[in-house]
Amino acid sequence: MRNLLAFLAAATLTILGVGWYLGWFRTVNIELNTTKIKEDLNKGSQKVQQLLERNRKERAEGQTPGSEKASEKPRRGTDEEPVMIEGQFKTHSPKQQ
Image 1: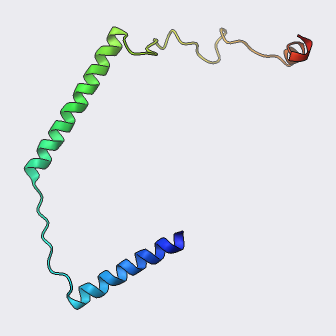
Image 2: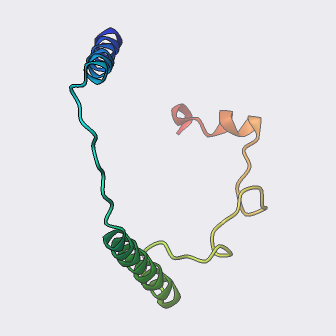
Image 3: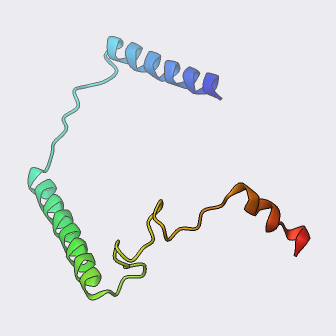
């Protein structure tokens, strides 16, 4: 697959190089509509700000699922978390129950 892609890339570059050398291509003008670009970027930033504001309000009201405070979640390495000792593996095996 990589060989095929490499061949296609080499063939494309060869055709473009030969065509440019022989004058097959004329000058290409690319025009950018900067006002449209600015409008689209402005619309996008407004949507992102609206989403962030909505998420902030929902978290403040507690509407989002999983919105527990960090202090309510058990932390690893605290005394609240059970600790297994080697002897416990033997006493709690499914065969003995």
